[in-house]
Length: 362
Length: 264
Image (tube, rainbow over all chains, first blue to last red; front, side, top):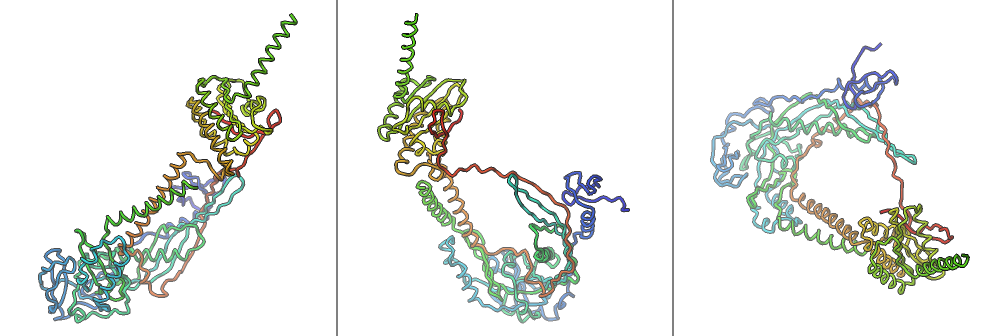
């Protein structure tokens, strides 16, 4: 004898009763019927998989390779831009520099302080020449680009910059419940029939991630930093202040804690997607609940090489970024509205004339 | 008394005969009296032009008979029993409207079956019947004669209007041009959209696939359980498209007619 239990309808979520006439469960709200076994299995699945957030270790001075060694910070200076308040770190060999974020020449030297020691660094592999070349290439074959942008652009001011990244390492165990459908259609002389079978799928498995990067600077737009990924971590070396000599470093202003949600999101998306890719033979499949458990969530702090250029055109900032290790280049170019309109009218006019002529002749 | 009866019957007979003879020569017969004399004459002139050019009879008949049960047969019989139609085949087209029942019928005969396909007579009815509904009877007949002329002209060129060679009105042309304009607008907007999208290549990456440790992805449990199913059915629309051409029926006199009919 089974005890009196209340089941939830997998279609609408309503409470379901046992229908004595059909010896099955029938939802009083949406009239869906299903057998006892399905209801039990679905109920188990519901209780089994609960939404769960990923827990990470806290990042502090003791994390990674530890705190600064004595004397290590002595040669390092923080520069603050008077115009945009952007902060950069450089050693005292860097002189007369302009703010890399807004181009303002007035920057103030400050005592270096209040930042964790980076654990890793990927040294610059590509020089300024390549960065300039890639920018010129990017501007080629763009009919909507304002004519004077390329010439007015201060291509020379493209700058190499170490950007702070939080790197998230973790092993995950995941349990995901999907709702899937199989659709079959057939027809007789009068009707077309569509039968949709609904399934509850459970997938359990594991997946490990190495150093998922999240940009730790608000001065660097996340979309740009994610677009120039991935960095090749075989080039990752332990941090030494020597790597920063003569180069600018962006000071992080987003701490590890605040970067966690973005890392979680990307990890979760990847797990759900990878699991889903193993599911075949269904017409549709949607993840209804995901439970991702973290076995060792470790955070490290790294400086990664990026070439950047910020250029203003008609009062709006346009940015370009190149991966200083792999050379992947991304950016945004301004659009000449007049040219865009011209192209639009030319295409529209051409099509309209040809189309109308055909319509009249045929 | 016998004599009077005889004379009377002669008069009635001769009236009937003269009426028939008159009808056979008159191509605009307005029994329902919905056209003015000058309108009738205008229509007769237009009809004569077609007759001269194509040796083809175009006829307009209006009646007011609420008791008529079959408008198609009415039109066919009017055609046959009044001697319309050119040549031995009786080439012609007749537009018959009954004010009493609010119905119209187009009857074709002889070469009329060739020049006016089912599509053709349907189209003429479709264009003319709104005028009947508006009580613009003259306009309806004028349009009918005008269309008949166009259809005959096209048939003479060997390109009979049919499902695969449709007659287009001005509004049909406007419609197709409007569609062309909308499609062009959408295509050019898409092209410009693609051009614009190439101007910005910096986009967020929703996944972290590049950072998955090689070989770390393992499935430990897979279970698929069936929940329930839904079946829906939709009626298949009956196909009504015809392959073109003319279908004919036989009138009471035994001759073959084509055409269309409807009400207004």
